[in-house]
Structure formats: structure tokens, C-alpha cells
Length: 194
Image: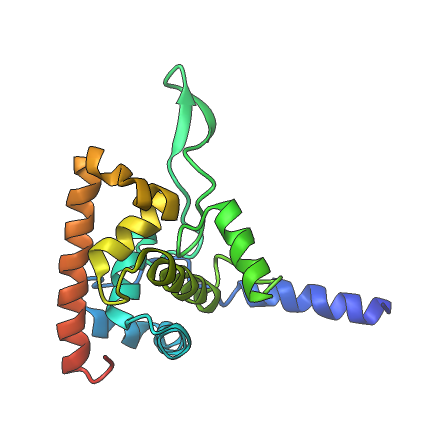
């Protein structure tokens, strides 16, 4: 590869980072407001809906819970002796909070070797792929936000084992995600983006 081409790709990569908004959208309680602020989100959600059949309100509710729509979201740090930073709680990263292993499975399965967890289009495509796998393997309807979220959080094996039954906090969170999904669905109908 010529030096000029390498320099071009380096400048492109650095320049593209400046277009990423690392802050959460304002008024995250209103789906229409989020899509108005971030038109790229609207395009990503629509494309994932067409490709995988994932309802937009379900995608949005899960992303809200997982990352608050922040592209470089990470899990909280763990501390040794309560003060020394000791890694993170998991490898979950990005909009969809995908774990390293699951993200690698997605990239292999989809053929998208260069997909990035901090890219909204890649993150929603991952989510659609995962939800479709949950439908295929576990029989969960794409519109069943609560169970889609539980399968997303616990993994397919964990969902099959019903590991969430021992986690009352997670059941409460899944109820909250389902309520948010219903609210987003009503809002999206009002602004014509359902």
C-alpha cells in the first residue's frame, strides 16, 4: 500500500472520530426527540427493522437501558480493597453493551469484520441479529420486549436455564424496559416513525 494511501486512511479514521457524539441525547424520555436530535439513529433503527424485523421501540428501549445511547459506554469498574481499580465488571462495550465473545460471534456470522460497537448502525444491526436468534432459538416474539431483554441480558443459555428467576432486580429492570418500550411505541406513532 502506498504511503499516500496509508496517510489518507489514517486522516479519514481520525477525522471520522470527530463526528461521533459521545453524549447522551437530551430528553431520552421522548423517542421522537431522540430521533430528531440524532437522524443517524433513525436511519439505523429503520434499517434494522427492515432487515431483521426488530421493532424500533424495542430496539430503542433496550439501547436506553444498556447504554443511555452513549457510543463508548462501559460497565462500571471493579475495585480491589475498595480503592484500587481492578478492571471492569465485564467486556460489555458500546451502544449495545455487547460482550467481546458475542460481538465476535456476530461479526463472524454476519461477515462484518470491521463492525464497531461504537457505531450506531453496527450496534442496531447486532441487536437485530441477536433478537432474531432469540426468536429462532427461544421462540421469543420480536415485539416481546421483556423476554427479548431478558435473553439479551442473560444470553440464550441463561434464558433457557431461567437464570433470571433468581434475580428480582433484573425482573424489575425488564419490566421497566417493557414499559419504556410501550411509551416509545406510542410516541413513535404520534410522530410517524413507528
